[in-house]
Image (cartoon, rainbow, N blue to C red; front, side, top):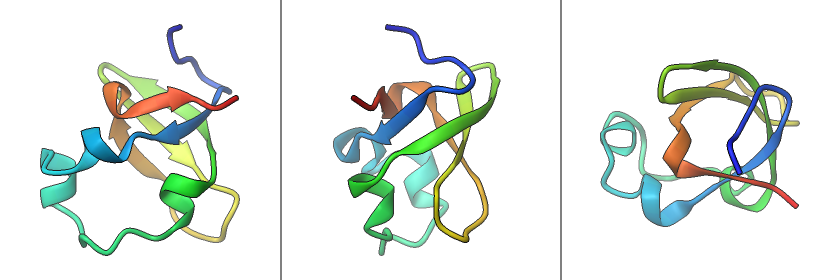
Amino acid sequence: MAIKKGDFVKVIAEKLANSVEALASDHRYPPYLFEGRGEVVEIRGDYAQIKFPVPTPTVWLRLDQLEVAK
């Protein structure tokens, strides 16, 4: 199922590990990144901007690092 704007998604830890995005960030990931779900607010090319329901900035991740939350 293709991810689209407005979908709620979860981050796939295995696909984030050792990626370019992971290497550019602190490796101490906050729990909400994998335990919670975020809303896709924008999609550009292979990347989606994710907003989590905690007071933090949005995050850009590759679409293949995300799955639709059930």
